[in-house]
Image 1 (cartoon, rainbow, N blue to C red):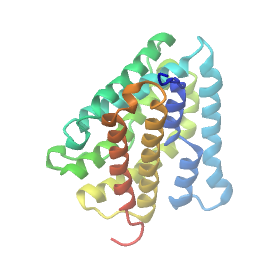
Image 2 (cartoon, helix red, strand yellow):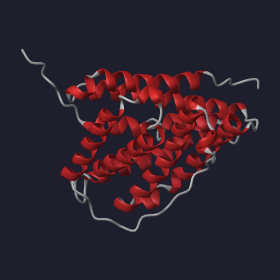
Image 3 (cartoon, rainbow, N blue to C red):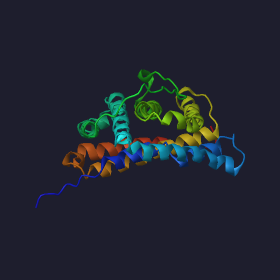
Length: 262
């Protein structure tokens, strides 16, 4: 009897992708470790703005026309996938991984086409704190880590632009979360300067970055499992072992971050 392939909703992958960084947990963690918020209410308040933002994205995103956030999620994921493929194409351990990754990207593109592009507005550009490093000077482990770091930052800037381009109501709600996002990525950049440039970072920056990288690790594992239910190509060793290898690289780097000490 042939294997029955069940196609799960790609939205599950998109939602977990967005939520790995753009979540109340991340915002609350940032406020707790940043040293800028001294009281419990002020720490929790960071999640209130995000809750309102998520309500707008979740509920209003389903109207005018239906599927605006669905389309944004597809495009956001495609942009990130393209960044990963571009930056890590030369990693030997991942050579057999890319055909499946490209198929994953194609499925997202097809899904976006089925939803249809919503009415487009000018959109706003947001710049988050980031660190620039010469990739050609990096060894393989550092290149993987730096590429994941920049993928996180650069794709988040893309998400904010996409939200304002296709859901203009978020122009009013993004300011409720932008300061916290800048703080989160400011700590992430502080750690990146330590990791790649040798500039000492705070304990808070190390904690924030460790949690972000572990969230990336979990997303890659989850994505591999969900895609394994979609098509046979995602069950082939090239993809299944490749995504596990990439996830393992991220995890090992995250676990190597020492919160205290040099």
